[in-house]
Image 1 (cartoon, rainbow, N blue to C red):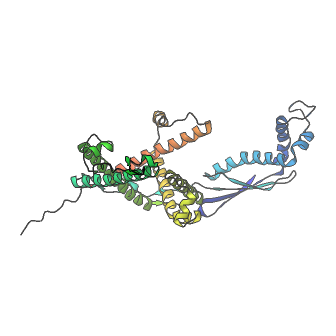
Image 2: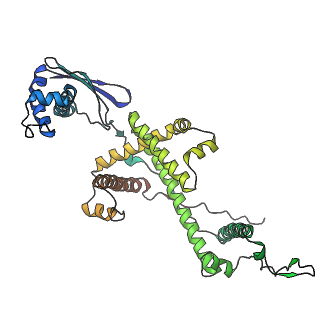
Length: 379
C-alpha cells in the first residue's frame, strides 16, 4: 500500500491511495458471500447461493462499491493516524481505478482540522463599565414611552372594532318624525393619563409599582448592554491574538447558520425570508457576501475558545449535562436527535466554562467607574 498527502489552500487535504491488485482479489469472494446473505435467491437457503449467481443478481458495480468501502475503511484510519490528520467534514471519495487484476486507486478529499495558536491570552485585560443607576428622569421618560405606545395600540384596536360594527352597534339612537335614526352622542370616555388606572391596565399594581418595575428593567438592560460591550472588546482582543488558517467549510457552515437564524427571526414577525430580501433589495448571494467577514471572525473566535478549553482541560460532569438536558423536552425526539442534543449541550457547557475563565482573567479588578459629573460653581 502507498499513499500521498497533498495539502492545499484553506485546509483542504487530498490523499491519493494505491493498493495492490491482490487486495481486490482477496476481497472479491468475501464480499459476494456477505451480499449473498442479504438477498433472496430462489431455490437456495440465505447465504448458500453460488457466488456466480449472487454476482448475476447484485451486479459487478455493487460488488466493487462494497470492496472499495471495505478497503478505504481499513486503510484510511491508518493513514490519518500516521499523518496526524483530523477531518472536520465528511471525506469526499473518488474511485480512480477498481478492477480485478489491477491496482486499486482512490483519492480522498477533506478539510483538515486547523492548527490554532492563541498567543498569551491571559495578558488580555478589559475594563468593564460599572452599571449606572436609572434616574427618576430615565424612569419617567420610559413610562411616557410605554404610555404613548399603549395609547396608540388602544386607538388602533378601537378603530378596528368600529370598522366591524353594524349600524345598530354604533351607539344609542332615536327616531325622528320620518322614522330616520338619529344617533345620540354618548358621553366621551375620560382622557387617558398616566395614573394608577393606566398602570393596572398594563399589569402593575399601581403607578408606584410600575415605576419600580420600569427601574428594574432599565437597570437590567444597562447590565446586559455593559456585558455585551465587555464581551465584544474581549472577543476582539482574543481574535487579534489568534493565528489560524480558517478552512472554507467552516466559513460556509457559519454563513448558513447565520442565514437560518435570520430566517427564524423574520418568521417570528410574520414574514418569510423571500419577502424580507425583496424589501431590502437583496438576494441570498448578496447576504452571504456581506456576511463573510463576520463569519470569519465568528469562526476564528470559536476555534480560539476551543483551543483555550483544550489547554485548560475543561470538562463537564455527568450531573452538569443531566441538569442542562432536563431543560429540554426530549419526548418527541428520536435517538439520533437525542444524540445530537447531547453533543450540542456538551459543546455549549464547555464553551460557557471557557468563556467564564477568560472573562475572569481579563477582568480582574479592572472595573471602570462611571465618570462623575463635575459641579460648576458660580464665580
